[in-house]
Image 1 (cartoon, helix red, strand yellow):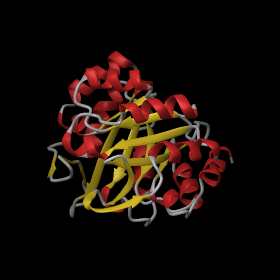
Image 2: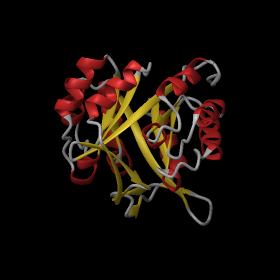
Image 3: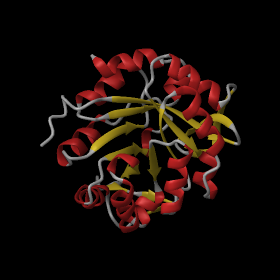
Image 4: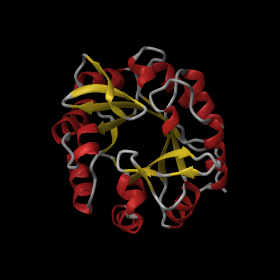
Length: 253
C-alpha cells in the first residue's frame, strides 16, 4: 500500500491545440470551443517561467482524425522550455508511441486504444516502461451509478466498466492514469473528489491525475488531499482563475 501523502504531487498545466491554436472545448464538444490568442509555444514558455515542471499537451486534431500532428510543436517546447511533456492524440501503435518519445515526450498519453485494445496497450507498457505511458480514461457515471468508459469521441460505451479496466491495468504494471469525469470537463465546476477518493483507495498502486472541472488552488489542494498524484489544469489557467505559480505552490505545501 502506497502512502499517498508521501508520493510526489504534480501540477500539469494543459494546452489543447486545434488547427495550431490553443483552445478549450466544453465537455469535449468540438462545436463549443473557446480559442485563445497565444500560440502553444508562447503559452508553454510562460508556464515554464512560472515554475511548472510538466506540460500536458493535447492534439485535438489527432484525437478526432487520428495521426499525431504536433511533432514540431512538441519538439520546440521540449527543447526551448525544459518542461517534461505528457502528450497524446491519435496514438494507435507502438510506432506512434516511439515517434512521440523521439520528438521529446516524456510520457505518451494513450486514450481510446487503452479502452478498445487494452492487451495491445499493456504490451507497450512492458516495452517502453511504466514511466513512458499514461493511460487516459474518460468516464461518466450511469443512472445505476456505474462508472462507464465512453469511446470514439464519447459517442459509444465500452463493454468493460472503469473499475474492471483499472484492475487489469494495475496487474500489467501500469503506473500513470489520467482519469477525466466527462461531466465536469471544461465546466469549472470542481473535480469529482468522490470519484478520485474511490479510485485512489481501490487502486493503491496507480498514480491518478485528476482532470476535468478544476477551478482554483483549493481544487488542486483537494485533489492532492484525496490521494491523487497530480492534477491537469486547463481552462482555469487560461481564464486566470488560478496561476501556474499558485498551483505549483500546492505541489510542495
